[in-house]
Length: 124
Picture 1 (cartoon, rainbow, N blue to C red):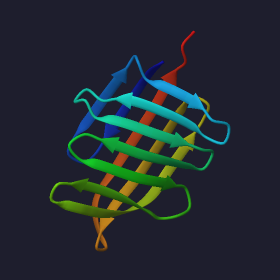
Picture 2 (cartoon, one colour):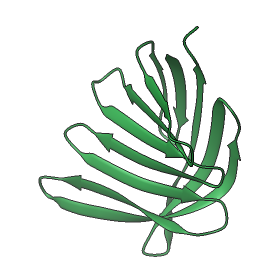
Picture 3 (tube, one colour):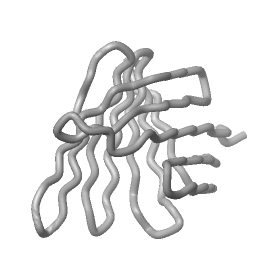
């Protein structure tokens, strides 16, 4: 399966296209796995109202995005763990696409506003 991901933040934009991504329809949720250009492995679990993210390279990033509820994102490396508060500004989930615009805060201060857009083309 081909997947395209566009990520935007205040400091950088990144686009990933992975022709060998996988999609598993597990009934209650869909699981997408893909590899970024730098080799990081990303797993997304998608339901009608939330998206779970796990990204592994030299750092481990785990986050949960919900429409009407604040959550947390954890970033772990050999030096420790950083915890961010996540508030979703906009979330759209459709059959083969989703979009999230969210804010990362730490200790009550806005760290960044990010956008994550993902769409996929099932194998024919």
